[in-house]
Image (tube, rainbow, N blue to C red; front, side, top):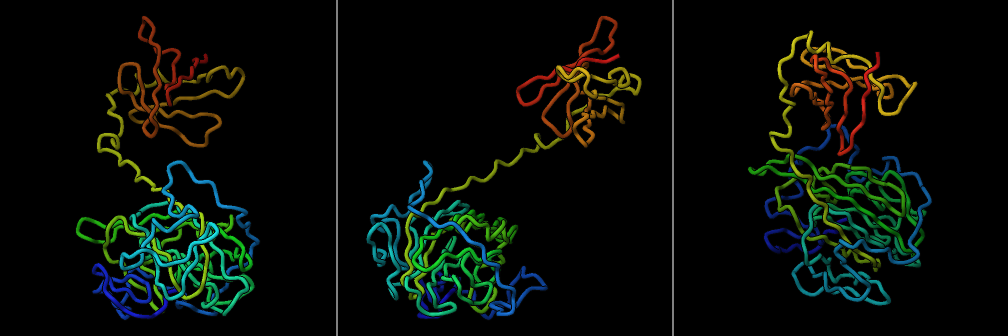
Length: 370
């Protein structure tokens, strides 16, 4: 949850109680890309997530070899305050703890698409109620909050439960453990995409596993998360710091690491084109058609090839779909939708006989059946 507190300008952003907003963006502005039918934000009548017993953390999780370790149990050297000063939270006994009113902290490094692991524990004994009970938050790219809250046998509005995309998407389940127990968030986050002229191409999406329970499943994020309102997307950099919120309660954190996730390599124009088929008459194609034994599958239903348009249709007996192939040379046919080929043997009279299928670096024989 975002607390309304002192407002100040840092690096061109308006910070309201620890929440980053562009100077040009006010809470009263109309949002965009919000579904026409949705629950009112923070509705107490919205169905609450059902309780599922999660599995806590007995000790800090193992760290993948390519991870960026953001807290190793020793110091807050990877974190700074909102103003860039050393982080003012308390470190002891392998964890760090929110120092109330010290302000939120953020990573020195910036991140975009990530896999993130973070462990947290709410104060024990529990104190307060609703949104004032062990409240903090993980702000991906400094804008998109995954709620940290003690919702163990406690009540609040659904879109503010632990694991919520705050103010937007309640968790699918309430997997919160009792106060003082170490809990885990495993987060897979994909940031929003903007065009060269700053138009939104695709919303951010997030998957959250809370104590081993999936509570967000590739959930679209509708814009920067906020208290009391929906905010529209504003174009921003591909990477930004991750922030942890000071909400005035001594929530503890440990074992924090992230893995940067690569963007898939875009397919080239040439790779996206269909095979360049050569012309064959229906009669010529019919000579290649027939039934074939695949590999050593004696007695099994055959692979069949039948003429279809400018090529053949291959039917595998254990596959429910027809697979088109087209001729690309005198003896080779290429699959239209798969990186694979079928190469036929041609006898002295020019008649196609047995064939070999090449796929994935391996070969399979196709023996023509009479």
